[in-house]
Image 1: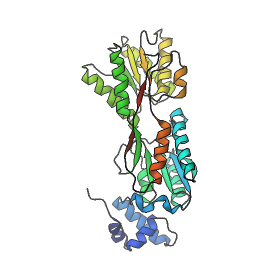
Image 2: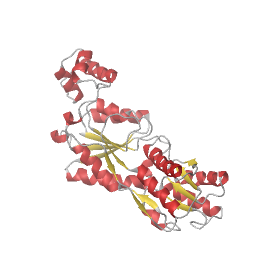
Image 3: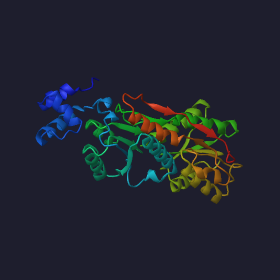
Image 4: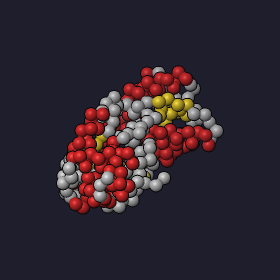
Length: 328
């Protein structure tokens, strides 16, 4: 598929190429009628400006926005994982002598507020974290000429730079470890099917089970502790003989372990448990939780570095590491 060019946008809007460039770069020297016509052409053609064209070397605002784009029913920014990402972004932004602006975009109104704020020139670029499904916000901002980097691989291919963890490999390591420990009926509590982390971690689980000739036993959670507890009850009802569970987040694993205790199942004697994320409290569970460590601090730094780099390499996929503790 041929990507629309600046010239095609100019032809569609009936203006010059220079005028289109001024509009997508947020210039105030263009009349409102012309600006509206150009933006309409941008939307109709699906034009995405060259990432380098709005390089941050201009230092127009000296500020970067970190946007959490998530539905209000699931506030993933409360997850400890995101604290590491925020710290990493903050460190890199501070080293570049820029300011960090945190924004929430959990509703259609929130999306509109972010678009208004960023297109008004208050920030030089945007990092979008915690996307769900086919989130329209990244492409909408990019069409306005705003540099955008995504935290996590977008579910729909939009050509934007992103930084992600190797979620598939992490899940493969976790489930292979359970098999190596002699576990044979291994279930999973998967993450939301509209989040790439949930999709990829389930893919890794299924891959190992398929290669070992075993059937998948799956329940779905939403990365919260309560959903992990509920999903664990469902798994025990569906297959009382299961002897291990790979849980797609530590928060859900905490809930799952609570349910197992309430059901009289010992961890790991009766049921081994592996989580994902290696949040700080994972070492304090009883027993301490085996989990997959993801370098969230490094992820935050890479997100900011990618945004601050003209012509950045993308994607950046960071390795994950299994941390073995007493829960397996």
